[in-house]
Length: 304
Picture 1 (tube, rainbow, N blue to C red):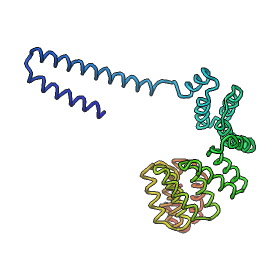
Picture 2 (picture 1 turned 120 degrees about the vertical axis):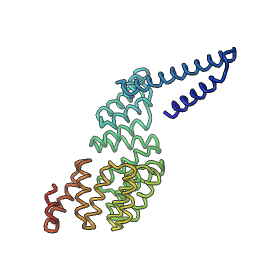
Picture 3 (picture 1 turned 45 degrees about the vertical axis):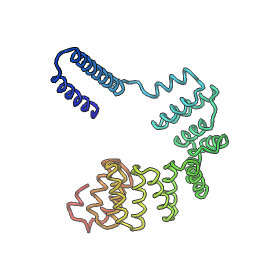
Picture 4 (picture 1 turned 60 degrees about the vertical axis):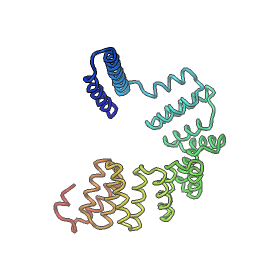
């Protein structure tokens, strides 16, 4: 829009200048140039509008074009990878695995292929198959940071915490910007009551992804656990400035006020959290608050 306004402003300048010029040869040239410029701008903007309309309302998708790319070149590994990522994002795990196995049959090779198969298998609950695929990916390339991350998830699931920590740290060593590994370490150290380490990785995550609201709510959660309520409030307010519709902000505020025995504020925030996402943790905490009915005012007891 700024470009359009600047163009309009320029047109006004042209017209003001044009009025001062007598109709001679020079005047005709300027008129021709002016009209040509206006026609070009109108045509250019028309093309822009049509392109935006086509992009917004066209039913074609990235998925369609990746499928066409694979049909045109059945061993185009990048098209397989990009399409698989879309399927994983949409939670179509069976489709992901079938697609990548089809790629293997057509001769597609590479560690990324087995990494994505392993991710899809893990997310669909096929843990043993996932472990095998992820290890195959690492055997082909020891730079597969997501493979290490999901192996960490598997080890954590089976309470092999030392191995899980090593896997997450290996993932970070390969890609220092892979924020999910920082979050995983934060939560695992919290589970182990190692709050110093948990806070360290929570702060690292924020440095890596400054605008990711999860980093701030994770750190706030740790501060609530260690009764650093002012610090927790600071982190949650930062998170709120980034994304005021993020569920965990209000759940953590609910925890904070519950710990401070400010039950009215706790109820208010937990109800906001539930509106954003129905979650058992928020309901459970509300249940704990209403177990304290004798110390709540009647209007608060009637809120739910």
